[in-house]
Image 1 (cartoon, rainbow, N blue to C red):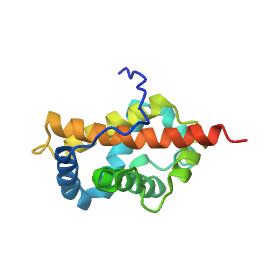
Image 2 (image 1 turned 90 degrees about the vertical axis):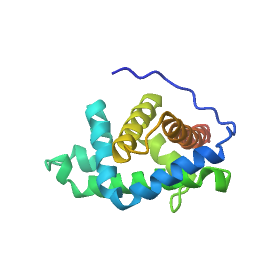
Image 3 (image 1 turned 30 degrees about the horizontal axis):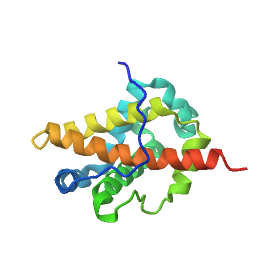
Image 4 (image 1 turned 180 degrees about the horizontal axis):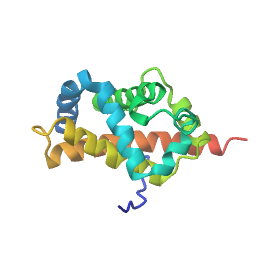
Length: 169
């Protein structure tokens, strides 16, 4: 599987009402399975990019199988929920928000662990596959595009913050 580097523009790309509706509808169905879907997301990430496991001390330093790793489960659910909630409110808020985590925190964590474009691409692919499997009866090219657009906005915000932090004295 090959991933190309995609430049996520920091400019405001319009997230339409239709895209918002598709994201919100699917998120409303997925909410109740956030823990399971979050774990599926990370298992897909690690399947596509096994070296990503090294970025997470609670995975790297553990002999517990991934499916049983409680710290991974907690982190995975948190990431999945934060991503989906942020996507669902993107249009209404008019900007990327991360709930209890600040954008500054998100940028610093991703910068600290050396996250690069390829990591975002793997995560994007894994997220879209996870959502497709979670709501197969709702899945369509329009829904895929809506989630991809929302994810692109999230990534652009994180990358802009990473860039800002990396240029600070």
